[in-house]
Length: 241
Image (cartoon, rainbow, N blue to C red):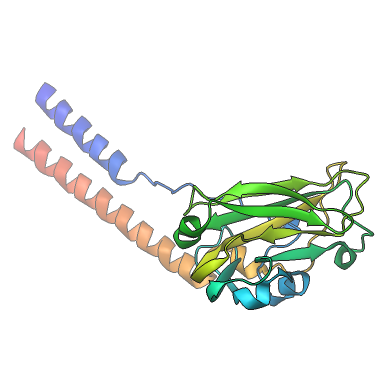
């Protein structure tokens, strides 16, 4: 009898393990709290080239491959020799957001530096410009993963631009990195509203049809497991009669 009980407990344990559901950790997608999400072409209306972007061959592309959430901005450069002027980059203009300047605001952006850019330069530069130059270094030593780059503009500043520049001035051809989810926050903690570039379809789960098929398959697997366990128990009980 003890042996039979042990067998039944083992069967119950096997059933429990077979029906456990595991989920990979998921990012929390809340695009409504992001000033620019880079989900649609609308976002590119707010991105202006900076410095020697033309000679650096700076190009922009929206893609969902490697995005933090939804889509992201992929930037690349292509040039040979040395740049004759300051290196390239991009910036946002305060006027595009109905502001006189960015004084008192904090600019945040997620950056995933490419391996190639990390080898070409030890840092990107997060900057504020207009009435005076202000910058902060963003180290490129963690290529392959997203990190937040930030710069806070003093309340009395009259700078009208915030952005990112790439201090690469010698022979470069390839991806600089991925840029996603910009937030611009005032000194009271209020984020400037989204510019209208959210694509909600990018944040939805599987379609109704896919969900139904997945549910049916899951139920069939559960029924098969239950049937197998029931057969095993009946067969074992017959053995000990």
